[in-house]
Image (cartoon, rainbow, N blue to C red):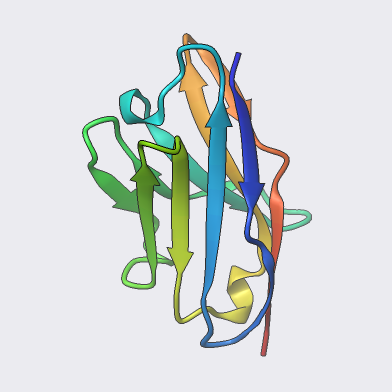
Length: 117
């Protein structure tokens, strides 16, 4: 069982920055041994992958955030971060943290990010 808790969402003006965090909890679960993902979803649209970090530390980004967003992890605190810079109104969405463990998909409750123009 894994519990993911996101934080850091809010309202920001276009061009601004926000930092999201995802704290992971669970028996014997450590983010350093897992692939961790950030997704986002706008009402009426499918959830889309934003960024990922593998157990080995490799990162991957959706084209629409490359050069603006950065995913990282703090192994000591079991937290995954998403630094979002040069934000755009189209980045407005609910952002979710995700991981897969033993074939089970785990999601956080989501955190709302709103970018005003």
